[in-house]
Length: 290
Image (tube, rainbow, N blue to C red; front, side):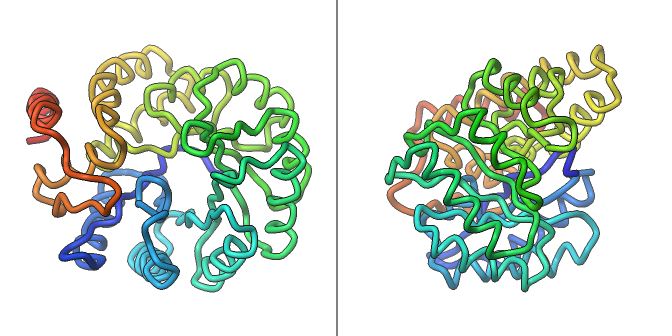
């Protein structure tokens, strides 16, 4: 079972190419500060703008740099089932511990289509799979009943839930049972989701505050909710600030201001506007990160 704080790792770029040294340094920063696992090539990693070769490159670097110290959950999702299978096979062969697969975007599949998509991937690649439900990005919401059907497949072990609906999360936890990991996909909802029985978070904010996100998850898993509430409110402004513009723009800019990466994002993302940049700088200063 996967539980705790998993960082939705950014992909650092330099002059249009993957900055391998910066990527390795980011991973070491995470390991040193208590993150429970690395999730490269997700939405925060700008996976939709990576070529297949770049995608494989990032996964290879992540697995090699981590070197077994903590789990690597490789983002291998696509709106093409065939392409998702290809990337998931590579992740397994490279040595990733699991794969994170987003619900197909743009296609707008039915609930049956979603089920068949994930069933096919799980049948073709024997690796633990965490499905990722984020209707704000994909225009399709995977319902709890569909997740429950998928949870009956041996190697589908969890879901990253970013629907924003605590009712839906609760229904999913109830239907899927204790051995299925329901993981928050929204930093601001980590505490309520874990209080309801969720197992952790795949976190954007952990890119810049890995120690505090890990501490929040540990407090929840230990059922120390007084400490968890304290950390929740301490992190709340930062969690909200990571989404003042389309992610990963703010978190990548924050890492730039912290001296860890360039602020380079790939089109169609663009640099933050001056007003939001000023807000972000004030927030990071207030949080003691710069």
